[in-house]
Amino acid sequence: MLQESQLPDPLLLTCSLQQEQIRSAADNILAKGLDIHQLSKEELVWAEQKSLHPFSAHLAIKLARSRQVLLNLSSNLHISVVFAIYKEHQRILRQDEHPHGEDFLSQKVKQMSWLCKGLNNISWDMTLVDDGCPNGSGLLAKDILLKNSLQKHVKVLFLKEAIDNKHPITKPMVNTDDSRKGGAVALGMWESLNTEYKQNNSHTNHVIIYTDADLSTDLGQCGLLVSGITDHGMDAAIGSRREASSIVIKGGERNDRGKLFIYIWKRLLPSLANIIDSQCGFKAFKADVAKKILSNLTEKRFAFDIELLLKTELNRSKSTTNIPIAWFDSEAASTTTDLQPYLPMLKSIAGFYRTYLPKNLEADGFADFIDNLNENNWKKLLQNIPNEITKREPDEFIKYNGVTANELAKISGIT
View 1: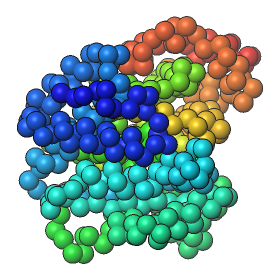
View 2: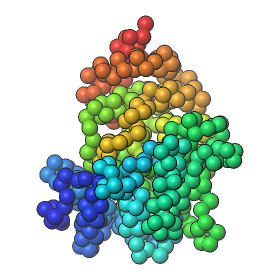
View 3: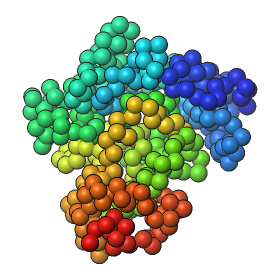
View 4: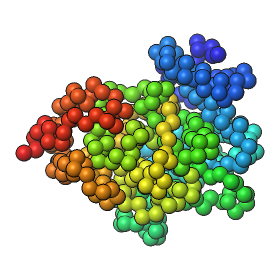
């Protein structure tokens, strides 16, 4: 299906030429005339042989299937893409301007342009929200838009301005320090509900997708999320790095941390039993559902993903689906790695349990354990994650609960 020798291996997110090569490969796949079902079968075959093909080849076939979803869509659709920017003053540059430069803004526009090219029933917009960046990421973004004439589809918002103007979606924040991505994404999603296209067109479908600033997830895969909503009747579709046909390049240390995080929050929120990868920065929501769940959102930091998913499920049970994606870890200059957000996220999740769900004996024990955790306890636990957790895959944590809150407390040094 592909001439893999012509595809980049290894993939470098800082190389724009490689992005073009992968999209060209996806076009070549589509030119073979396979329908969506045939593409899905090919994708599964390749996923069963992950190690035999480079990441770029797996991504190309996912991009092809994603675009095929939109090619098959007869109704009108508008896609809004939202992401927060914070200390992205390096990755927003080109590689010739900085070693970590991904030129992510221009690349994201190219990804969406490729996905929607030639489709008169599909339109899109993109909203970047400066999350109080001390390095002026938002101003850099506005400058790049102006220099490259990208303002047609893209706008930049500043969370500080929204807070100062007492925008209702920013409550209860009083300054940008109260946000760690969540406040910025919520603002961007809310503003996307009122995009200009609504005044001029009668689109029957409006899907809001939020992602991360880096290029870990190629936006050419947006069609995969759209399919979960338009073709399968879901209210939300979330990109997952934990499915059998997910293709992931990721560091091992962060993987073990992620497993521990998933194990603990699974004990607290059984309503989200079918969701494994809650923190993947690639999620889509029906616009009318987004309006409901964004109202009175309490979490403006990194756990906002989980509150949105929980409110979606409480609004309509089993309305969220997991979508296997291709994901390449952009760990260089990662703000998430620097901030180590898992402990504050768990404390927020304990609050979600107590706010939204009925009391449960096991959940009570884990919520109490989380309440007693401090940074030193958490670091000790991260250095001694039980093998019973690390040796298992996260989907097993739906049923497996063999490590108790008391055992984790002892490992953490909580007496």
